[in-house]
Image (cartoon, rainbow, N blue to C red; front, side, top):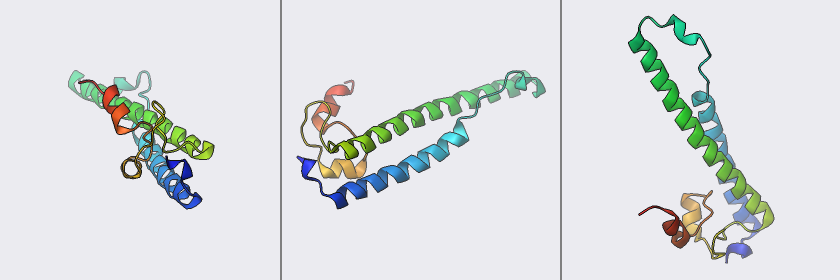
Length: 119
């Protein structure tokens, strides 16, 4: 298991997670604004208003996805601190280092992830 991950390896993954967290937090700021009530009154026509509402809906969806990813990153950082990083939260098996390199916030091994995904 990766429980024997040394301090240097843990620090490398912590830095990757923190960098990803910073990037996503910045993206959330650019997509997370809420359309103010009554702000639509300045639109010239219904088409312009509809486009604005559609843009807001997309921004809300992106911000929601980013929020979920931030939560996964925070949980991964907690697992590093607890010494359980790299261990599948479902089966307790090892998550290969190559998988963690690609997606440091992952919490499931490949087998458990494939069982979770719809077919």
